[in-house]
Image (tube, rainbow, N blue to C red; front, side, top):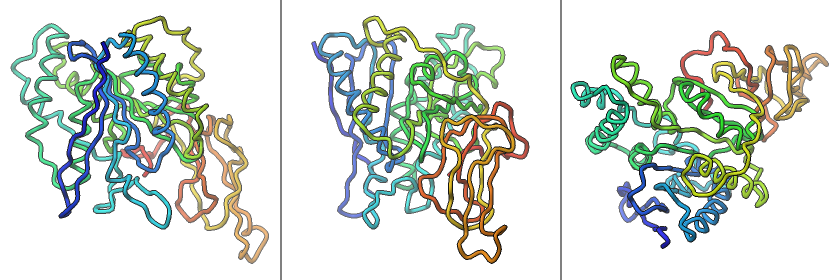
Length: 380
């Protein structure tokens, strides 16, 4: 018997006469032991994830009709109705809250300490019991945490939907990019089947990225609690990852259907959907540290000409781009070369071709941590 349900969660009104809601799709009869949460459009201007959701819903509908769904699966196809309303001069923005300019995928709730206080005298010597205890504590703590503005209320609602999931996938894209994945260092290599199935050319690991994106808000609590209570077994009970599905212009039924099928195959191989998954593809590249990503920045204003594309392997001294300034008074000043200092792979470049001093134009993923990266490893 089909289990699919569709519901809406009302978000608190922040202006008179306005109302927004989150729409979610659930599969499962509520008795399953495992939960999957997948969302798209937290950065509301990133189109690929929405189309992947369209195709994934079709796959899960078919699985549900045949009784193959063996987990509680929650989909939020449009995770940011606030950002989805940010049209300006015929362009959908949707990356930053216009009220406080906060990135919608930054500064999510950190409730580790609140949960630690609640469980400190209740942990046992059994990992499964501790997992149940921690999830119950999370469900008790979240309603006590206030959210003052619209962006915070949205983030609170999304975390409340996802934080008890065993698998959390947050669908994003970069500007012009290869498929790559962000996840917590403690999740690797157990999660390498996700990167392999997606055909990700880079997987970027950080224990703490510095600004608490959504995936970390869901998964980081587990390894931080394990570090606080070293004498008690606490598993990494949530595999949460940010999936960067190429670039913003990579929107086609062919690509989206491929990505949806890969997500489906990953879930099937993990035993969340009945049936035999296809053979796992080889992992294209081993994971590398997020701290090893070099940001190629502009030093001068001008027009950018890229000499490397996403997916290109590079070595120190390779020319990534040139900045051309037609107002320069000398040949030397007219063309400014930008070179990489590391060996790695180009994971993304900007879509537009304009430079201003300090602007990040490209990112190169290297294998070794870079010095002087600071505590905030993610770009705006």
